[in-house]
Length: 417
Image (cartoon, rainbow, N blue to C red):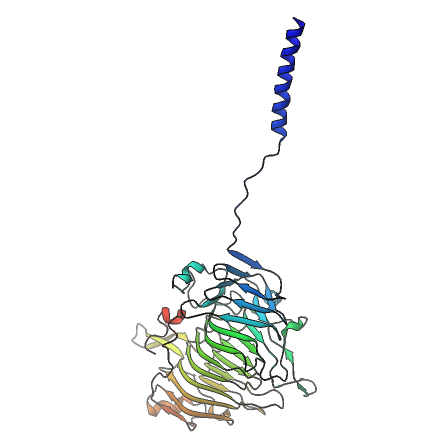
């Protein structure tokens, strides 16, 4: 009797401890799936790296390609940027000595945009390069792309007027020495930029100052830049600060300020371009800021300063585009040395849009035409005098045959041009 009771207690105890042991075992949770197709970037690039087209790269701040490092971006890659303003504005910065190889193609452009943009690598791979959710006039959602080099600039100390061969680029805090640009190597090479679209940028960095879509500071002539589109940047589309780099095949669409801006004696050439409906000036061409003086050339372009529609009173009303100058050439002690040729401005024009002809003492014009009646041409000139090389009439001259990949073309922004 006692033996049978003990046996039963042993069995019950064994079952009890087995159950307790099973309950005490930790439950292994099912791991959450990791999205390996999205890479969030928080650190600068200090060694060679490649961004692949089947992933989305998110700029989590100001990401710098530091001196000695090369960033290669595969065709069709989508780069998005988190929101940020002031010192926290997101941007891709290529420092002096750094190299960017961003060589897209017409079939697979490289797209820089906001994290709010729902465009995907799969969409780009399928041949659709338009944003599925953002309109092409939404701006200021992130910073932009900044490339800095060692080529000559014209700059000076504001207090002493002494020449400076390097200065800090606007938009980058002075505490970040990666923001320095300029030098004496006019053949400097910052890499290759081709078939890229920069969208919805121009974040405010303080005191009404914003980042350009593409900033080129002291970039040298060995750098290759072609097929660049800037869409809806809150500040300028493209701005050059000195340097010697040439740029070809450009579309600047819906810039929030100036479309094309040059400073500090840029010594390169802009060839074959479309400027469509900037809010500021179509061209803001500033002079040298030091003793170094160099000329730049702007040629073979079509400019749409504004878009007009008939209102209820059957009057043309400006619905998009410039409120600034058509061509604004710097005056003062350092007028801008620039040669502009084979450029057509599509009419009509808003009241107050003019060419600063009285200040263009170092500028030359050749085959620059405005779509107005000859009797109205003087009205577009700030002082009423038409400079040599400017005339009424003409027709669009830029070649858009290789720009069908741009969002501007896809959306119809280049129709009829």
